Image 1 (tube, rainbow, N blue to C red):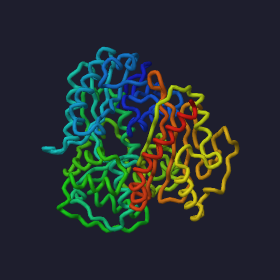
Image 2: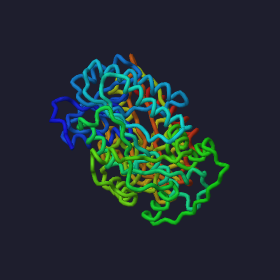
Image 3: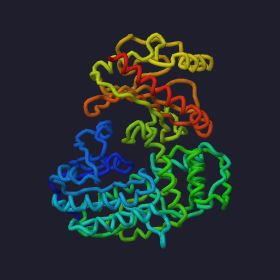
Image 4: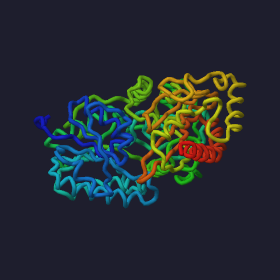
Length: 478
């Protein structure tokens, strides 16, 4: 295959904080590219700690932010979608694509590589229709576009894969919607990344649309059975026709931790058989493809071996107590308060958490929870702080352990209590015009149904407690 000669331009990954983007960036770095990673939230990208990667912030819905990040870009990967925005995500996707298309033309970008979705005949899915129309909008500009369309991706963090993993790990008997018999050609995450890199450097791929698929076409039920076999679990699948796509999305919300808007869009697309003709792509990029069993084994191994380039909130195995059965995605609850005190003063108070049993507010409730953990054999009430006023990575604070910190910005504590899941408590000091927001957030990776039953009743208490805690931190700093 003919490859473009090496270019001196930058490779842009637009939407680098998303699932594909966060995996594509380090893949490109290993490939030898000069990479600029762009997202709306710069702090998330900086939290990845990618070496040799330029990180920048921009929003495709704000055209004035695009020109600077597109400077000196040769190839731009467009990986943006707005599923999390709710019912209006389709219109937002089209506007974002138009803005990016025009800015890429102004910057004289040579190629846009867009990751779309496999399109069935007469799709009813708003999500799939939006992915199709986004590609059409990008192609209306002067920059050559290469679109790669993929269906289900087998890899840690993939929404479809995580839904199936939650089901297999936690529901030995599944009452499922009839869409479990829809057909799909799942592709391994590393194979999809290899395709995306290959087509970007092929002159023949300019202006082309390619289907990307793995070597097997399977129903979702078959994939779950193969996953169960690899995980050494027994499952029984009982399809029920009355579970419509809308009801299915509510059902998934109750039994998995995949974000609800993503789950709803996902289920909407699962009504169809989604097939692919990857003949053209395999002709121009003849890479060896993994079958479903190898794809699953590799995905589980990548997670265990810390090969996932993702922020801990998005599923770090270390923040799930190295337990793959705990949900990849985290449930979360937070509270905040604004302050005019300096970051140094706020940070000083945050670092005193737990000193002498003082958790800033509602200490009686904290003591009851800690006592319950002590009775169950947990670390609460058994451990003391190294220093009453300062913290460093590795320090213990009662049932918590410091796992990350950015002085005057962020403190991350891993919860080591006895509980049906794994948790993290994070404090942040966030600049906000002429003041600072102090935010406390709990992230919880539940262990199946029992973990979710533990989490949901606690959400109102978390919201109340974290608001009170941050208010007291602000008061003391003043």
